[in-house]
Length: 412
Image (cartoon, rainbow, N blue to C red; front, top):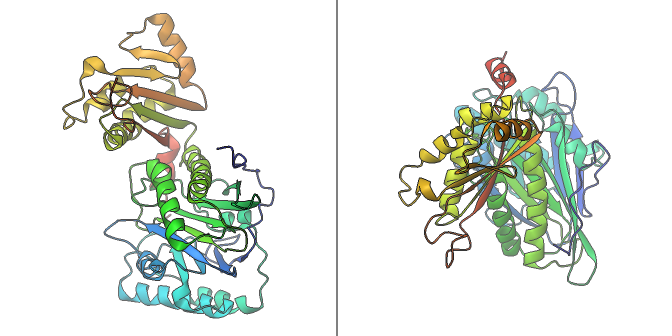
């Protein structure tokens, strides 16, 4: 990707939003301390937007309303509420979400239908509307100078740190446009069409249809390849906003920039999974097609036995073979053609001895563990004359005692 600089993630250095955006992060008192609400407005000359959402049957009012408002591809901002998902709250929960949108829109002088809304936190509890009303009604006189780090911090729940990423991409005129992304969510993570909450901002001038195509492609390659615990959230929301304050960017270049930012955020989310100590990456090649490769990769990534083995650096590579074997409906997978590798050490069909198992233990002690599997399916990638797209890489983490502790006490 020679037309962009690599993604950067300063620890907590300021990460300004691209030109055309103004943002406010503040505390409505939803958490004991720190900001818990933010509003971003797109003041650019040609606003464009794209958004994808959870397919959960229990999708919350924020998702339902945002789907409606995102349909035209010209949303001009987003309001995010932390610590409360406002899911499974009935008709009153929907009315509350509409009111939050209306009050936020009135404070920043846009139409309610031009704003998207996202919520994160405990399911089954209504918004504390008195607190939100007071906060949102005070936004008219507030400063709108929050950067990406402030926004990412305001929407954290069990995250241990804010997650941002940034790239520059070359425009069609030879200049540079920015893509800045933020994300949160380290538990209840198995995105299905979107992710936890993620928002990308760019000053590129781009048509809504081009933006939507580029963003959806990036989400599919990154956020939809992430899993912490196999549980799809009721509130998954991923949004891309373009201000048009800069020069035009080609569709391929925009997609690559989006993918670079989303991949950076995906890896940060996986590494910060609840209780996680290691980033686990699973690469599958030689599949019949990408769908099969992703299915097998997720079977490995989501296996509690694989995840606990990785946590304990237990050289029990047979658990990966077990996970592949669970995909019994994929009858074209022949175990005799499968190859399993940890790092650069082949474990099957090499059948490692004691020395190799000791080396495998060292590989698994690393902060990042990569498992590679070549399925060797007839007609798959890596096979002469086979398909070129029979591969997929997915991202997750180990399973620890701390994960259980966090979620056993989540609401108490």
